[in-house]
Image 1 (cartoon, one colour):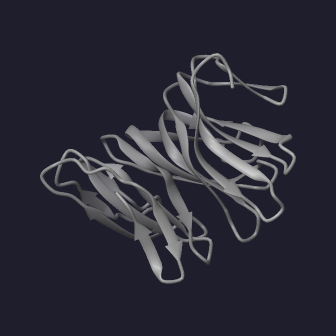
Image 2 (image 1 turned 90 degrees about the vertical axis):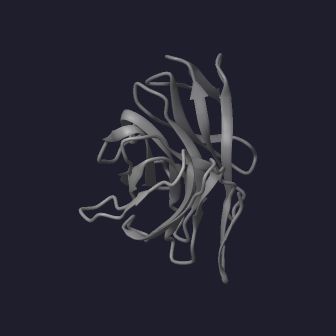
Length: 219
């Protein structure tokens, strides 16, 4: 950790015992220290992914973010060993400070959602984003992968939200100040389906789990 508040939001473990932690570290030019490696945030808070070996040694640390508040809230491992990361970002955020491309995305409104794929050595392979004019939020641990490495995202939104990161439109409108959403994407990050739940009051998402029988959602 560093001088500010550092939080782990999700963990993933591979078959060799390597641990991947994702979360947020706070403070302008705050130092997130792990195993002697200092990482500086771009803004008020950045997201991070930290890879640890089976013995707890630091393999690499990846910061994600821009000048405003950004964070990682979901980490998962694909069947091919890729590190899949999801979270939220504001303004413009840099997703490839360890190399790869494209390097950055710009939010459409307040806080937008991102879904990124990295190699086992933290090199960015692709990143997609969805958003609307208001804030969107991903549940803590709100990322799960299916058997084909497609991504399932669970979170909340208000107003209108286009779930399709491509040229198509898959817009949903909330019924309250905070509705729940469940969205599915294929292994390339292309949109498959989305469902929303809402009512008179605000709803809070819990966690999504994918198994052989389908998707289980708590909230």
